[in-house]
Length: 343
Image 1 (tube, helix red, strand yellow):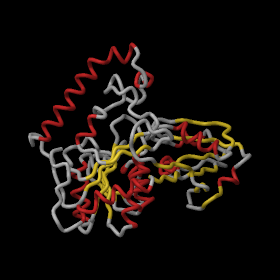
Image 2 (tube, rainbow, N blue to C red):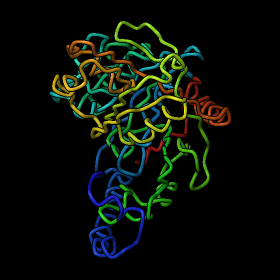
Image 3 (cartoon, rainbow, N blue to C red):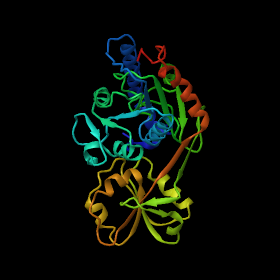
Image 4 (cartoon, one colour):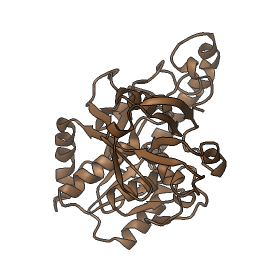
């Protein structure tokens, strides 16, 4: 949906108004689903560890995966054994799978592969996140906390902490799909379990915690070696990105003083192939870390110099303070009353 009629999601023009009745029906169905889970008519499953769900209420990427990695590192620094579950968007196969360093990206999905390589945490993917979590705990029974990458609307998995992420789009025009970008009513969704709101863009549209996103001072080669970004200045570069907002990546590169002779934007989760690289023979190409997990696995054409520029992402300290306060009673031996049991 994110490539269809994007302009209508930021205005309330004739097209959005035309789709308004369908959006109203969507809202009724969402609220009915909430009610069915609250009353236990639709079954949900609770596991014996705290579950933190990171998601968004708008379509498209908003910075969930960088936040998941930041959360995992934060919890690991506290001495917790952290696991991650994900659906693995765009992957081949539907069965539950543990993502390892050598798992093919087409089997795991690009984001779970990036999370595993960046954090070293156990990562499991499955069509049903409850299946992924069940298998994770069976393989790693000493896991003390789980982060769910996306899955805010996957109510079959009960959760203890819900974090919703917004970028500079905010809630768009405030309307539900297909007249707007919202999957669920906002701000109504705040009253249905949201614990923390984090803004990953430059301008927060409403109240919530802030974060900082910037590119690292270095780029990475396929062999893991580092190269200072400053050494790439004054060189003609090709920048490519298959993410939700490629222009944000390109703008960050330009802000670092790099000269982009050409930019190539692919759809989010693009399935890269050799043809995508063959046309870039003899060029220096910079890409995102997310794209690199796929591109580094492809045969490089002669003369191609492919570099990935990591993203450094950090929520403000007050966000971590609030998270730790929510998590503390869940990690104690006493039973917790928090947990969105009615989802």
